[in-house]
Length: 273
Image 1 (tube, rainbow, N blue to C red):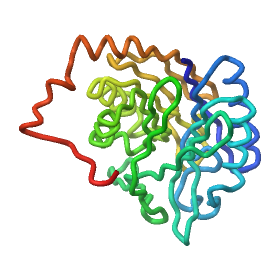
Image 2 (image 1 turned 90 degrees about the vertical axis):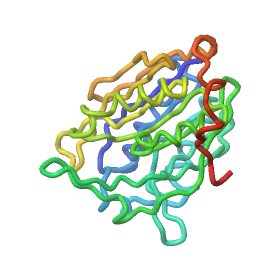
Image 3 (image 1 turned 30 degrees about the vertical axis):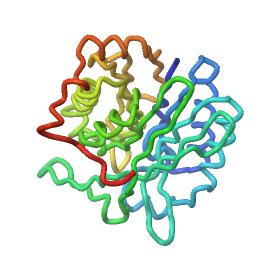
Image 4 (image 1 turned 180 degrees about the vertical axis):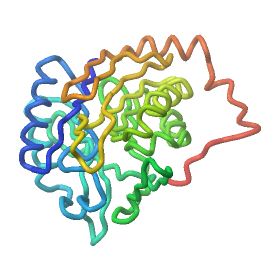
């Protein structure tokens, strides 16, 4: 099946972001994409001061548009992420819609991006956001898909739980920056893919050098062998990759790590369903 990642140029005007995102989703569908992902914070600028300002309920304006375009194009649409308001708290949330426009799952970013690299970048999502507390997978006719958002990719255990649950594709909408992007963006994706023998896809916003938080870009698809199958530059674009599940099965047969794990010595376990 064909996967498409939309590397959207995000502006401060929510209605423009929604209109352009839906236009690019339609374009991806005409090119045969069956699963399409938008980037993290696709409907507003990324930053702690923006999250409360742009936050919505789910369902709400942004997710309603996503539901409509998923149904119109008859695709699985991973809605990047939007700032969500619920009971006075804010979350960084990804909503996924099926080909009939149904909301399949809602994933709230588990690991909040609180970092301090002296002289480079300091950022604290926890100033305004609360963390989610549940895993999210969804089934398609092609394979089971597991979701994370940006910083979640650094936590290998999350990917391992998804692999244990039968996921063959992990999708991380994410906005790495100009410090962590060149250092770790591709490395982490290839690591998660090889460790778990899964396809890994990341959807980033396009780079805007005038923004208060500058995204790295380079939306990417990595194979279970660790090969980079497709990679964007920094501009607004759509990245396509044909996902070959036969290849995944061959890799797992050739290097059968799942049956060779020493579960008598160690385990990664989920503490919630």
